[in-house]
Picture 1 (tube, rainbow, N blue to C red):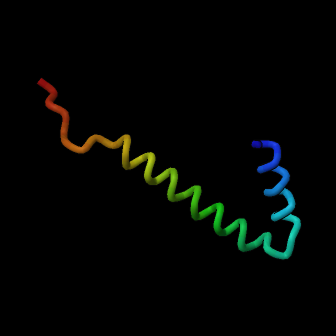
Picture 2: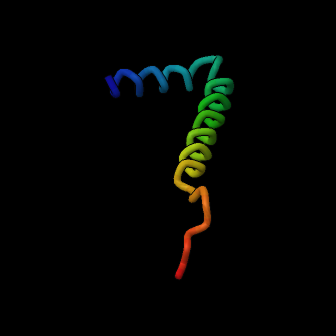
Length: 49
């Protein structure tokens, strides 16, 4: 399954849609990292006594 996805990505990057694919994947990747960072950030200050 992963191999098939990698082949599909390679074909997209060689096609006339490569620029749109790069923009989409960059946006989605950025969103995923931001969401992960937000989930890991503490929601309230830690009591350091």
